[in-house]
Length: 491
Image (cartoon, rainbow, N blue to C red; front, side, top):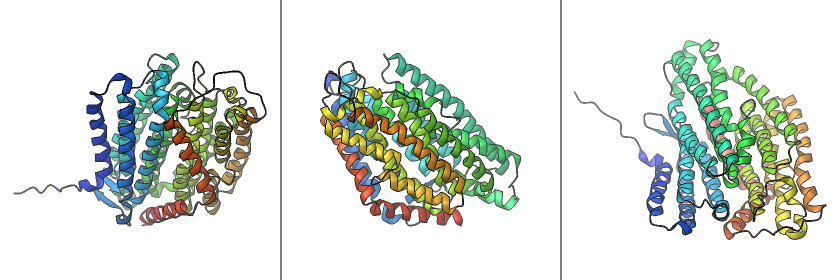
């Protein structure tokens, strides 16, 4: 008797394989590069990431319909493809932000870039996971790398504290997520999303207590990386203590991966339980926006302020998840690109202020920047406008799509809460603009940005304005992605 073992289509894992090969290759190359020239590893990583991004984009024409491999546990579709491009873009910008920063901090090591690539690999696996176990493996691959990166400045007590808090919170919530997966398996006999959905439909498990509890546990598991209330407590300390380029990376990429995984699980696996999880996420959305924005008002540390801002933005993005329609998915995809531009740009300017003994993470460190560095001040205003959702920036377009999705779904009160929170956000964002333009600079050493940092800031600033003034190309890609995703969801 012959046992036929299906041969997986490894071409669908092309981007992941390339990232893995690049990471392992850089580990080997790093052995032969002197300690004072580790920036070469970063440049090689940057070139590799850009190349992989272009190769990944080439998959787009052949993905008009989702394609699976490994017995249906790994899916490649346009939804996963768009998020993979977000991760690769964030990795490339973070590398540019890191080149000079690591030299100033005295932590220029090749392992830094390798860990970032392994983190990117984990996120790419997450968004293509069509099985809860595959998604969990992606989360752990990502998380283990992020924990180390958050504590990379091992001689800094605040950095160590941030990494330890992140690790402990992550391990705790990881167990909760795994327990939620176990409950789904107990109720349906499978962890594969398509089979879970089929069993729920055939057996009529719409009010099964195990599945009801699993909704809360899955929301908690994904909620850690999303930094949604009440699993947001780690974010301010980690954002403040971690190396600033890593803070920029954490604020966008893992959040995007967690949202993508949550959407795939809730829309494809437990879609028939939508009335239950929609109500839960409605409440979390409103509370997350409000707590994030109100607490940000009290912050004097720039990185902590952006941490609470990030929590608030998680609430805005949840609008699209709760809406559960095509405009919502389109808005989420567009918003994550816009959020990558504006948030990494804001953190990039915090890195720009890092010089001598000045960390540059206080709001007061921006005092008089318009007089000493007018171009940098204008760039910061652009990022602040986008974060606040004011035209003509990409942030405005993204927020408009999310609000439109919620209105179309009939969640009017949720949109009212979001609009009021956007008004609150204006105060703390433009408090930074106030100190830049309405106060005189202090006699401090002037920042001297590296070429990588300058290039990164120029790229994200231009993209923030470009997709605010002319959003059609990115909107068209997001709309096409949302259409194919929702067709599979409806079917």
